[in-house]
Image (cartoon, rainbow, N blue to C red; front, side, top):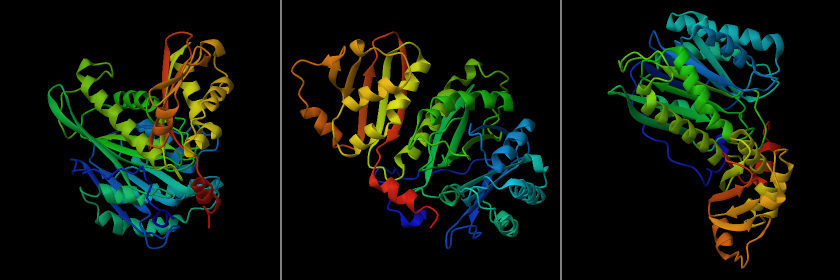
Length: 411
């Protein structure tokens, strides 16, 4: 389906992802659902690679999510297998058997334990995964793995995505140069709570799994978990971070080690870039929105208010129609369930404050706000005027395109 959709007007070009020591990627067409396009991706990691992961909080997760949660306990990874077109969700015993079979297939090829293989699936829910197609395709795919297969992998995991997504950062740990780079997919069913959202990131840094997990969990809260396309949390969301250790930096045993400061900044920046690329590819999106909330009773409360605004269909359709209807922002704040006071509330759009302390600014001129609404990047500011809590969220507008795509998703 992805090939038939016009590229998002908010798309960004795929960056140059250079080879990374200890990682090889490949993609092939296994015919799982799509005809004439890649839909199966595999990666092999050097022995000793550590891994961290965050997953959907959906109470109806896919079988691959269950598999990865269990595998994560080992803290090491040798292979990754991802298929597009079928989510392997709500498939009962058949879903479990599919993960068992395909993990064993990959383990034989990479000569590792099945528990060192990580699995992900994205696509239609409730259809049994034809896992034998994956079993048949994996040997040939494994033979083609290469250190420059990143973009092919990014394309192979797409479903309703209209462009492949990648990001890269170079930084240092204790004076040693290290690199972080990753790919992501996602377009609809996006309200990560850790949409159909997947991200796979690798670094050549030497980092033990517990440290890696702390950094990923922290970074995800400030990036993927601050984004939404349609308020729907997928059954299949996951972000996996692999560390090959080939950079040879000095050993780190504590996530709070000052030597990690630059690495943490780079990782957080990369996670946010990948998350925003998913928002930019929101189904039917024509505009991207950044919502900043200040003056809340806590940072957590501010984030919840920001997400209430970001998830409001009325706010999102107003943005799509380029209507500077700031009353819809007030509505979203009021329904958020968080502490708010009408008489201390202030709202701004595009850097122009429209209302201050519960009333329209004297002499308010809508002209610059109307001009801002015609752009592709929309800024909304809300000051609750209660305390010092701050939070932010990113989303996209809601257009007829979203209905068109999701009304015919399975056809």
